Image (cartoon, rainbow, N blue to C red):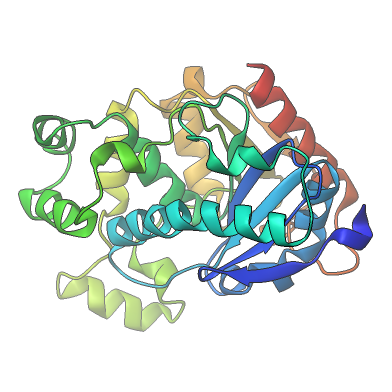
Length: 289
């Protein structure tokens, strides 16, 4: 099936259309490398494709306003599903293409989210928004952790979307070396990041706000973690996850891979075979749960 693996641009995303899809995997990578996921994560995503999934590689979007990115991702993929269906028909594919017309929140084990590094934060924010169905919920859930201005920003970002439209219900998530960081990760130049933080600017939501939201969320029950033993960048976030919400993580308690650093998922023609197998196995296990 690898001969069918090819990314094509659709609705500002890269799509590898499986001729016999058993599900769809949305992928968001980390800063810089995630801007070109079809290139830098090529090997890993090819293996996911070969396991039977249509793969949607969502380019990483750099901004300090992470709520708007998460919501815009959902806005794009609502129309993307129709574009994928049309492309499948154009290619003459008939096997299970109705999958792309089905509501992902109603289809168990058909849609999955895969994130690496800071891309996991965008998925996390969608997990948080999943339990919000009304404006009252918005104030109740977010008001405990963030300022009212961010709640207003979320409403503005939603625009004509309904809160239900951004739900990840029944869509399990797999995090590879997740990073929940502030402006210091968005701006690699440490002195510059420190200066911006000193004058009161940071990403929204901040690390503290994001951790508060995750801790109070009831939605973090369908996620798995894969970590790398020599990973320095994700170490703090992983420690926080395991300390704060170990009962919500489905792994036992996490799938550790030795002798690997933070950028282990990267690769073009050659990549990490064991990691790819762990990813595919975890997706399967999440479905069984």
